[in-house]
Image (cartoon, rainbow, N blue to C red; front, side, top):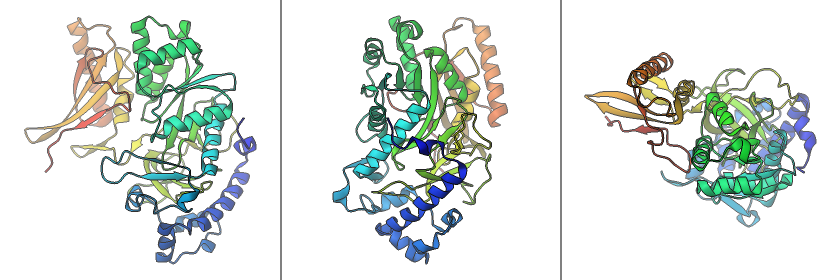
Length: 432
C-alpha cells in the first residue's frame, strides 16, 4: 500500500500549510544548486524572503533551456554520489534535459504513482500491464514501481509487439493497462484482426492513458472499443515522470498532488497569473524533491485550473486535460490552431477511425493545411456519401479553426503507424 494516504484527503488549509513548510525548506535546499544560488544572488533574493506562498512569484522562472545550459548535472542540489538514477530526454535538438533522483526521490515517485492508481480503483488483486517504453523514458519505470508499490502483479510488457501484448492480456488476465491513446486504438484494431473480443475474451476493466494530447471524444471512443474506463494521466520527466496529476473515478479533471507540487497558471506571453478557469501555461514548483528540485518550471503545457469542488471530495486542485503546448501551436494564415481542436471535430464522426495526419505545406506562395483521416470502413465504395461526409467535416473544421483545410478521407490502415507517440503534424512549409 502507498504511504501517507492521509495526504490525499487534506483540506485546503492543510494543503497550503504543508506547501509553505515544504516550499521554504525546498528554497533553502536549492541554495546547494549552482544555478539557483547564482540566480538568487543576481535577483537580490534570500531564502528568508519566502514568507508566504505569494512570495513564490518573487522567484524567477526555470526553463528547459536552463536544464540544457547546465547539462548534465549543474542544477543538482545534492552531490552526485547521493544520486541513484537519472532520466533524460532524447536530446535530438541540442543537449538533452537530465533529471537526477536520490533513493528518497524514487520512493516518493513510486508512492505518488501508487496513490494515482489507487484513486481510480486499482487494488493489489489487479494485474497491471505496462506498454510504455522502459529505459530513459519515465513512463516505463514510473508506472512499474508505482504498480509494485500498490502490490499488484505487474507485466512489464514494454512498447510494441502488439500481438504479444494481446497474448499477455488474455493469458495473464490483465485487468489494468497503461498505454498512450493512439496505441490503445491500435491494440483494438489488432484484436479485431485476431478475432479477440476485449469484452468477452479479456478481463480488462481499467485503462490508463496519457503522454500525448487527446480529446474527450477520443477517450470515449477508446472506452467503447475496449470496454474499459479510461483515466487520463499527466506527468513529465522534469517533475519526475508519471504521477504528477491523475483523474479520479469522476473523470472530471486531473487532481494534481499539491503536497508534491505548487501550481501556477500564467499567460504565456505576459507571464502574469490568470484566474482559475482561464487557460494558460502550467508552471510547477517541486516541493518534495531532493536531487533536483525545480522552482517555477515553465512546462509549456496549456491547461487551466478547474473551478469548484470535485464530487469525490479531494481538495487537491484539478487541472483540465492538456490543450496542447504553447510551443506546439500551429500558426496558419495568422490564425492560432492547436491539433487537439482538429481531433475534437474528427472524433465526433463515427464514420472515421482514430488516426489522422495534419500536413502544412506551401503551394503558390500560400500556406495550406491538409487533414488526412482514416475511414472506419463503413462506406468506402459509396462515392456520394463519402463526398457529403467530406464536405461536412470540412465545414465543421472551418467553423472551429477559422481556416479551410483540404480534407482527404483515406482507407483504414493507410496512414503511418508508430509504436511511440503518434505523429499528428508534419510541417513542410518553406521558411521565409
